[in-house]
Amino acid sequence: MTLEVRTARLTILVDPRKKALFERLCAEEDATPSQVIRRLLRRYIEDRTGRPWAPSEQSNRHPSRSNMRRGGGSAKSASRGRV
Image: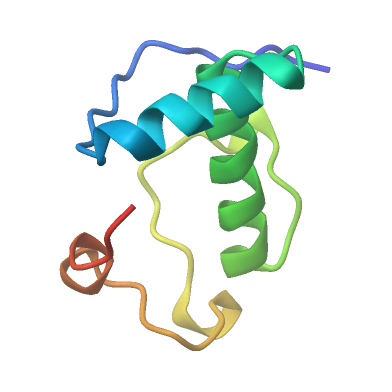
C-alpha cells in the first residue's frame, strides 16, 4: 500500500466545547484528531465517488457528476455546513 503525501493543511473553526470533546474521544480511541479527520475525509470521498480511495488517485480531477450521490457537491453548499 502506498503512503499518502500529507503536505496540505485544512483549517476549520469549531465550537471550543466540541473540539475538547472530540479530542477526548480521539484519545479514548488512542487516535490523534488528525488520524480521525483523515479517516472521515476518506469515508466521505468514498461515499461521494462510489469507489475506494487510493493514494495514487491524488489529483485535482473533480469526480464526474454521474458518480456523485445526490445532496450537492459544490464548494458553496459545503461551506454552509457547520461542524
